Image 1 (tube, rainbow, N blue to C red):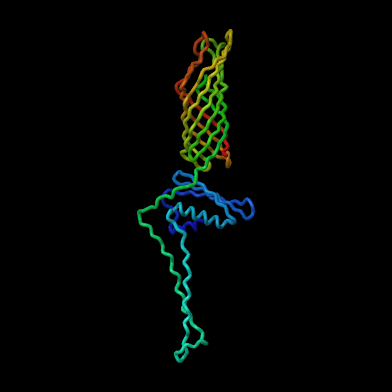
Image 2: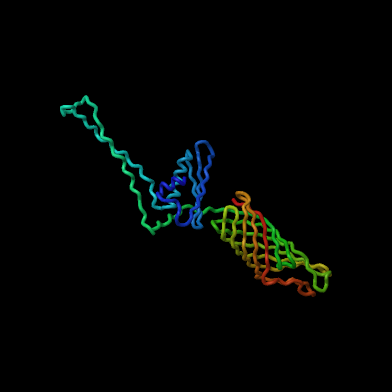
Length: 305
């Protein structure tokens, strides 16, 4: 296919932004072939599907598509038409007269003229051909666990589930997360304290900075909101109360593809509480106060569709 592209463009393949091409051919039934062509150039992805009764025509069509992406002005090399044979000329006899019985000598036809080669002016590059293929839309679901520092008393472990869509380098997801939390005792009364938990939902947007076939790295930002629930212990009348909670997050994410549709994903983020409720026990005062910034680490598994 590369040789066919070079023949069509009449120039070495390359120049300009690198063009990455990946083609795969499959046959679902006898006499029916399918070619999936994926290209990447300048951070833009495109894909196209071709079907045909044989593999060779699909390869030729793919070569033409790639050639037009390399050189938008490409034209398939014209096949020169065969020259018309020169009429036979009678071989005159010894007396100079035309003898119809003598064999006639034929003048050989001139060689076919070579198709003219187009020359491109130096320093002039053709404009890139506009891509008509749509960027593929993928769905992703995942689950995992996390560790937060300073959001609840001490370090707290959470469980998380998320679902989203991926369009090119962009990823948008919705998630739900729950922190069972832990207990904290009053500074002067170790037998008295409270147990606190947190439940929240959020939306996150990520942008890939380096996306390879196996490893990807990107930046993420999001918002989340929920409620903190506290239950007192060691007091005469234990009680449970809730308070609203909201925060903004910003961080980095990385993914490691372990199968065609399965990847491991890790995230590290700073959490900035917008609503910062104090954790208090009635008549005993504050037992925990949220800092201005907390930190979170997440690890999970996700499946792409």
